[in-house]
Image (cartoon, rainbow, N blue to C red; front, side, top):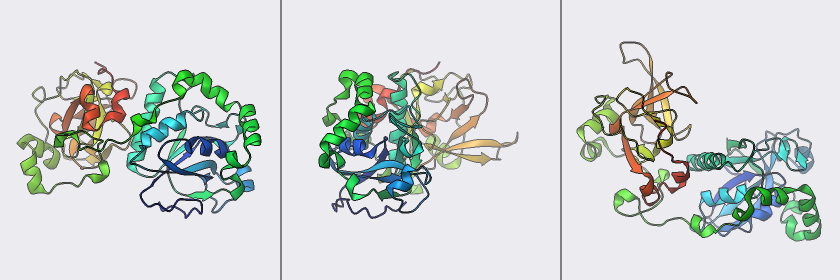
Amino acid sequence: MALQDPQYAPSDPSLKVATFAGGCFWCVEAGFEQIPGVAEAVSGYSGGIEKNPNYQQVASGATGHTEAVQVYYDPQVITYEGLLQALWRMMDPTDVDGQFVDRGKQYRPAIFFHNAEQKLSAEASIQALQNSGRYDKPVALEVSQFESFYDAEEYHQDYYKKNPIRYKYYTFNSGRYQFIDKVWGEDREIDYAQYRPKTSEAADGGQHGRFDQQAFKKPSDEQLRKQLTSIQYKVTQQDATEPSFNNKYWDEKRAGIYVDVVSGEPLFLSTDKYKSGTGWPSFVRPISSNAVVEKEDRSWYGGVRTEIRSALADSHSGHVFKDGPKPTGLRYCMNSAALRFILKADMDKAGYGQYVDLVKKPIS
């Protein structure tokens, strides 16, 4: 979606944009403006239907908006993952009905992603936060496609600087930072240098770096025939199925990540792999809801199946069936030839460091 034209936005075209909600925008704006690499944080409204709403309209709860902050950051200094880590240390991601003393949907927490990469990062970070056991309740904040952002009135911008005494009085009485101190303890303060982007190339190029989905351009058919083995080409490009019990990963038990053999896009984690007895690598879920695409497949004589293809490279990967174990009851039956496996120890240098904390041993 096209951004509005916020009057408080910096003019530097090299900056990237992220949009978050964590209750009172005074607090969220103040928090992000302390993060290295953040050039500006603007208070405003997002997630609703009314165009150009004012504070009174949003505060009434009638517009569907929530108080939000548009963050303009230097991607050479801080990654989106770094911004997410900052967000967790500003709010309560388990409270979907408001934040602290501020109640109502107009104060609900949310992540409004601007592209698929931000969505994947947000989902991975939320899952890691949930797995950490840090909260007594489930992490349940809204993750939605960004649609619009409207600046809040001028007196709301940089409120913590303009009215420091009133701001400190409000934050103390809200209980926000008492809650954050209790939940995070010594982990509240982190070294954001660890969230600086890695500038070297991806592992397949002989160096290290972050996998960049936006940089991928699918090779021509001629290039793919040279790049892939015969079985990899037949499976990914011609929808073939490799032999069961005679493929690379059907019995792989090590911890790591499975990526598309053509694009390198992340598809599955060892955490969700189980021994299905079919002779093909099987998973209970993909790494995220938009990592794969489902299509109706009528090529099988026994009836209709649901085909699984990778979202970015459009590689045929396998099929999904409804005979899997808990918690999903699904069996994503994949072809090894459509996948490349990366050990957990190698994930960071291969560009998949954001997923390391999610990787566990296979289910079985």
